[in-house]
Image (cartoon, rainbow, N blue to C red; front, side, top):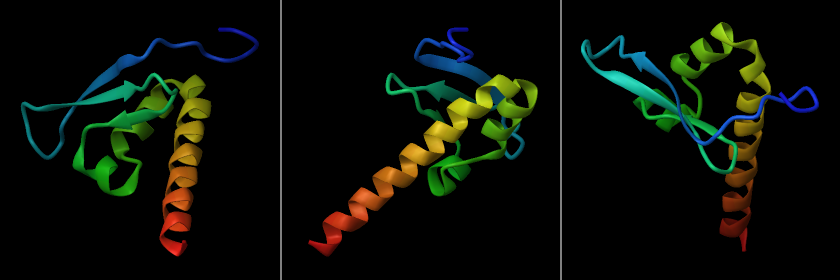
Length: 86
């Protein structure tokens, strides 16, 4: 931890068993840009999922990283919408 922040290397943070497809797992990853994502359908559609929420519940120090990820996705969506207005 540096200055109260968790320092993590990009890559797989957690493998979570799928509740809808027994025997499968979902990967929660940290990108080189510092954003978290999951390979499940729910995350692809909503930008958040129960797997990422489970990560935060089991490790509260991840909350700031997940918050940053959500804010970054919102910023990117706003930029994409602004381009449509041009």
